[in-house]
Length: 307
Image 1 (cartoon, rainbow, N blue to C red):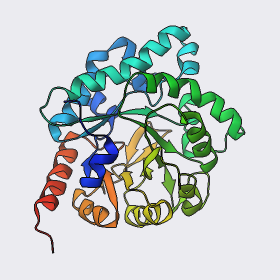
Image 2: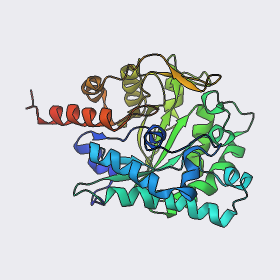
Image 3: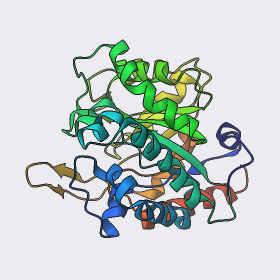
């Protein structure tokens, strides 16, 4: 159901469970995501599949669901011959589908409209490198129209997610300024730095003192090192942390398949909460069954008597 509280109010009371990877759930439902638009294609061709994927996470215990707008951009749709007006309608539909799934349960579920990085639109993996050769102002101009359409659709929060570069984070925060919707900022990281190579303290500092930002953290990364990143995000910004790593497997672009072992361990969530995390979920390859386990871990922690 639609919450009566803001997300910021809820986070002051305790941690919330985020959903997991939308793409892996859609693939589990039999959807073909080989198109350059990825899951965003289904906003037009299979909206019922997107709503079903959101509903699977809600049933698993997710109390925040993230829309299928990560790779949905005016530029990406235009390459497929989609008009600007129709693209705006599809962006708004992403929020509507998540809200419809959220209303299937009698508990509060917040809808986060995904605002992915510029590199996601390029569909060439550059969101894991950053440094596109664009200025902060140019990136702001790219992000603002989409952010405005998503904000107008009525989400509870905008998820500025999988951001590889502190410069792009600055551009995103400028683009959403004045939109009237709170945001969280989440970097994709590797080796304790942003994908563009910046120190995380420097990257997190971009959001310090910004009252529109309700949480800061990391996503779409290896689960290793999450705890230290959470501690740093909280220390630098004074805000709750958001964390949703991948399964631990790695994408082999040449073979077009996942390699390695699953290292995402839901039992670590208790330590992440202790470090200051308040929005906790999964990203690529983390499905509803893992989210259900995660929800159980967090609920168990909430039931423990105070020390």
